[in-house]
Length: 137
Image 1 (cartoon, one colour):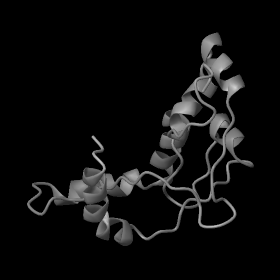
Image 2: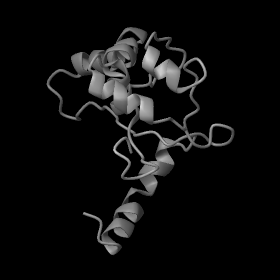
Image 3: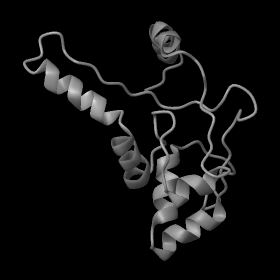
């Protein structure tokens, strides 16, 4: 987009946030040429990438694995993801102080889609079959 090859692009917000927080003049030049739109903020919300964690059934250290997952969902870890990695917090109510993320929205408020993760999982095979039919690699 910044080079003028297209007028719209879809990207993960953390890539743009990295450019926004960069001190390099060439990165700042890109930031000046693009805008941000999160679709569906007045209705069902914007799609978000889904990542998850689990404990393997035969884990050698189940208690440690559970403790690690609990830490990842904690305000401290979520704050690190927001401020250090430019990712939106996944846990509700976590405040952050990332100027790039806040500048993309009205004060850092963002409405993600509300599709239950169980519905996403239930349709995973159908989506892959659709991608296979159209030849997506």
